[in-house]
Image (tube, rainbow, N blue to C red; front, side, top):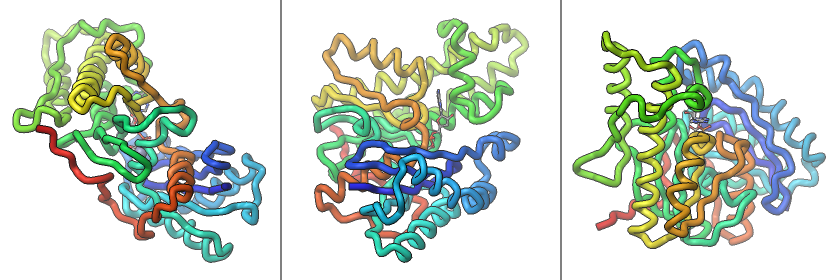
Length: 334
Ligand code: KG4
Ligand code: ZN
């Protein structure tokens, strides 16, 4: 089954072709240089750039896969959650192509794409926990089957990616900050500064990173702050990563699901990969990370979801772009 997918939920213009769920091409046009001056994504600029780039990216995805539009079996598109202006560009492009070709069009939840992305090139038996850690989201889902998801934990404010990006901005490192903090932290001492591990009293399973951000701000304004940049980055990164790893393990134990997938842009973090692997080794957990190209936003994960849904004869999502879209109901753990 040949599927062309389009993904424009935030600031990456992406298109990909998969054959029976295997990646044949995965084209992404990054907009980082446009948003770097602002230290974050400017929605209006993102939508405009998607509009300028989308057709070229689609042609690149088809070309790299050596597939013609007439060979395709379906078109898939991210319909939410994300920036509404950005989503509308992708949805309109997909609708236009579907109208022209008569191909079926499948709307996909971006979070389902991230949650299942570790399965694209890897293998994990269900049920498993999928921790989606990106710039827009930080949540853990129980994946029981294709189309059967429940949210078991989420952030109550900032996402982990936002914490990295805002931290990097304060440190003058640039945007997007996650990769830059990751690289700068390599030579640093992660025990140099004790930054707080965020916790929410009323919901101990929720993630919270705003206190960490304030702690970094306070530290940088102190007269006696003498940590080197690598030490600050390593310590700041450790505070985020430790919380993510601990929470994933706690949830896996509570739900008795010894399989954890980590997805989203922050899953590219080298220390997260290292700590998650070492912390879960003893407990006999199976841990899967997608390759880097499937961590940050991409359309291959969207094509994969559409393929699996079509195989299972599950209905696609409604084809209306929406900025807020949950993935499954909330499962309250007692
Ligand atoms: O999944 P993604 O491309 O977009 C969203 O759906 O939000 O994630 C982008 C986020 C950014 O916040 C970026 O700083 C972060 O992923 N990121 C990283 C790394 N690479 C990207 N964070 C930590 N370490 C990295 N190596
Ligand atoms: Zn994403």
